[in-house]
Length: 111
Image (cartoon, rainbow, N blue to C red; front, side, top):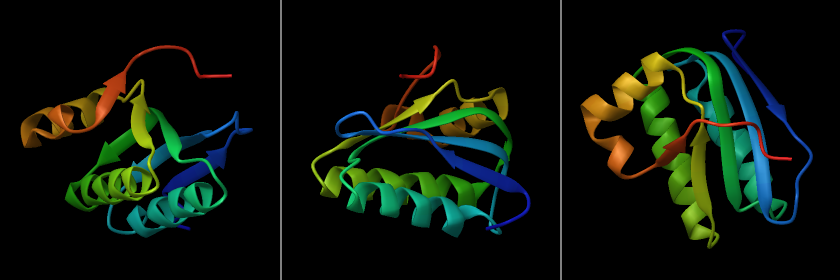
């Protein structure tokens, strides 16, 4: 895993799996996110929630990783929600139109 991004899985509730991200989501960390999400989906957590309030930067490779995670979750019959995405993440999602594809909302962490 990249030293620029930390990933912390929260206790799962049913099919909902929460992964908290902090730091930089970019070329160096995109694969770590995709792998962590894939592991959660394989363990039955197909409804993924990514806590993104602490993500300080996201580039096109980070965006690509989010789309891969969405595809993994949907392929397992689940969903992807971004919880409290930071302003840099919100701007990127909006500029690229991905905010129309991936659900995002502000609020407290589930569970």
